[in-house]
Image 1 (cartoon, rainbow, N blue to C red):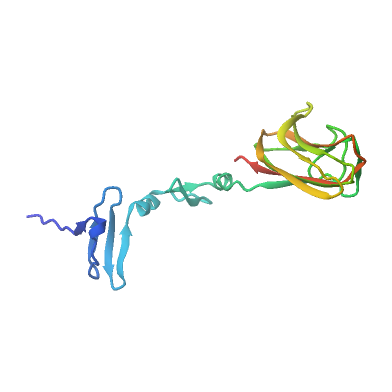
Image 2: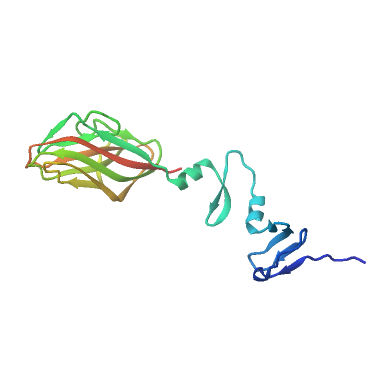
Length: 217
C-alpha cells in the first residue's frame, strides 16, 4: 500500500517556528512558499521569486533585473535604455564677444561659431534631447539673449525646436535652463544651437550651453 508523506502547511500568518530539519508550506494563494527549520530559525527554500529566477535562461552578458516587480533577463542594451544614461553635449565661445542684434550658431564640442548650417552635430542613433542649460555675460544695456536648439536632417535647413531659453543678463553673468521640453531625434538627424542677441544692446560675451541626449536602444 502506497503511503503519502505530507509536511506541515497553513496560512503565512499562522506559520510557527519549525523544528530543525522540519519543512513547512505557506498555502496563501499567490504567496505559496516552502521553509525549513534550522537552529537559526525558519529559512526560505522556495517561493514565487525563486521559482521565476530558476526558470530564467542563462544568457551570456545578460543581467538579471527586476521589471515591473518581477525578475527578468535583460540585455545590456535594454538595461542602458532603462537607466537612460545621458550624453552631455556642450558648446562654448569663451573668448568671443557678440554684438547686439547678432544671430550666431553653435555646434557641440566646436570652439568656433558661424552661420546656420556651417557647424552641425550629427546623431548616428535615435534618442531624446532634454535639459537645455545656457549661460553668458552681458553689459548693462543687454536685455534678452535667446537660445534655441535647431534640428535638421540630411542636407536640409534646420528648424526651431521647443528646447529654448531666454536670459536677461544685464550687466551680470547669468544662467538658465529649459527643463520642461524634449526633442525626439532620429538616426542621422543633426542639430545646431542658435543664439540671438537683442538689437537694443551692446555686446554679449563668454556664452555657452549644454544639452542632454539619451540614446534609444
